[in-house]
Image (cartoon, rainbow, N blue to C red; front, side, top):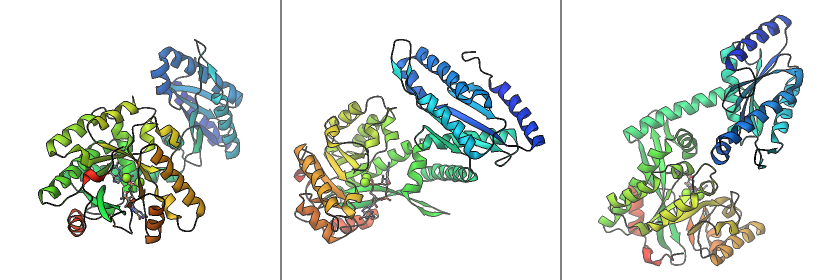
Length: 435
Ligand code: C2E
Ligand code: MG
Ligand code: MG
């Protein structure tokens, strides 16, 4: 009613008719699904009436952009669908979709004069090339739309069979991971962080490992994104945090010093409002001294649009006595000046900067600039991914003495790392400078 457009039901009828005609005339029909990007955000921050205004305006713009080439319907919420009953070539279909996106991307002035920008994601499937069945085509357009969104939005994606394979694989991984969590098939590896000034062990990073009984070892890059997308990262992260804290306590119990352990935390975990509780509870049940715990976040935590208040969360974590590291620094979008707004203790220089240190003068000056500015902001620096002694030397010369990398130690099992600690002196936790 809001937009005066056909609803889902009418749209389906229309699609069936168009497909029947196309089959008869031997031409293509394109089905497009459109979803406004970050609409929920606009609705939450600017209110429902603004949200409604935006929907009405979007409906108008989509209809205008399509003209008499196709039918538009509103499937519900901020979802629209379009049919191009005589679609022509893929290029023409893409052009039509692009015109819709361009039309939508123009700023919109709402009620009180606020300018709203809203982009959209479009998924496209084509009859008969992609499928013949109505239900199947609807699902495909939806899948393609999600891919457009996952790639950052304001984009169009054509459905491909590959997308189904990916989806099936992600679903399989999800099921297996759920089971692995229940059966405790996950465990931690530990990679030393070395203080090259005195060649002592400054601490370690905890890295999760998964060995599936059938599929064998699965790399974090193949299951962490699935865990994040499905929310499984929340129980997984809780497991990792507890195991990590326990590991330090076990070491200390055996008279093996481990000054600190660094645990990766993903943006999705930080969005969970019980996260701070989890950290507090885990520290108290394991009895770990908070000063020995570091949490590694990435820039995505700080710029998470859907998080309520990242700065407050980070402050609350620090108030527990836990330190915060910014992981993979240099690969995201923050500038160092931006960092001042965020309560961070340590920067971890991404390994892409470390890799070229020996050959590339530019990489060297970048690393030097990061170290220098971090220093003036009172931040500690850890370099990641040092694979040669030459890289370690350059880093030490640049003033970065905390180093993690295969050259100094690969990720190891708990037993192996306990052995490593027995053979190496540690920098007692009081030696790590606090920011
Ligand atoms: P990260 O936090 O940046 O972890 C460092 C990664 O670099 C680890 O890969 C480590 O094995 C690898 N690495 C360390 N030194 C070297 C080196 O000298 N050369 C090379 N080529 N690689 C090196 P890993 O264990 O495969 O982990 C990959 C990513 O998965 C991590 O990147 C982190 O983002 C994520 N991850 C791992 N464990 C967890 C976890 O428990 N929770 C969450 N949320 N993410 C995790
Ligand atoms: Mg890390
Ligand atoms: Mg890293």
